[in-house]
Amino acid sequence: MPHSDDGSGHATRSPDDWGDAAERRYAECQARLTAEYGIDAESRVADTDAAGRIHYLVAGDPEGDPVVLLHGVGTHAATWLPMVPSLAEDYRVYAPDRPGRGLSAAPSYGGRDLRRFLVAYLVELFDDLGLDRPHVAGNSLGGQQAFLLAIDHDRVDRLPLVGAPGGLSREFPPVFRLLTVHGVSRLLY
Image (cartoon, rainbow, N blue to C red; front, top):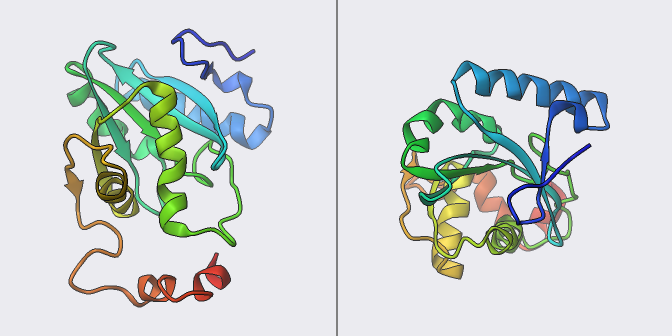
């Protein structure tokens, strides 16, 4: 049975708490990976209006400055686990799974304004966790999300980027160009 102990109302889950067999297996693998890296991380979920269930990992010093780690397009929150031990002594680390990745719900991206959707669930999550302006690190699409949180919402204190944010390089990939054409993004998502 999921339980909550952080005051946010976000349920802490063990692998056995997931109802679907595939989710249980994923959660078990994630738990083994956190143990492999020697991380005392909790697997939690939050419900958002923007995207439904958002899964995130939280670790580190509860009194430390918050750091949010946003993963790239084809990865998930557990991608950041090798870095967490270096951060956890001094920071409170949050690593959410983007909607449709990891253990987060998979809402339809169709008919949504992608720019707004990429950050709407994060703004809700930040509000729920009491994170006003955390440090936000992002990789690829996560870098784009972090960048948008900073420029559209002023919700970022420090912004380290791992590689170029998705779509923000000198060579703007054709697929990202297509996403800017009204109507085409609907077809792609």
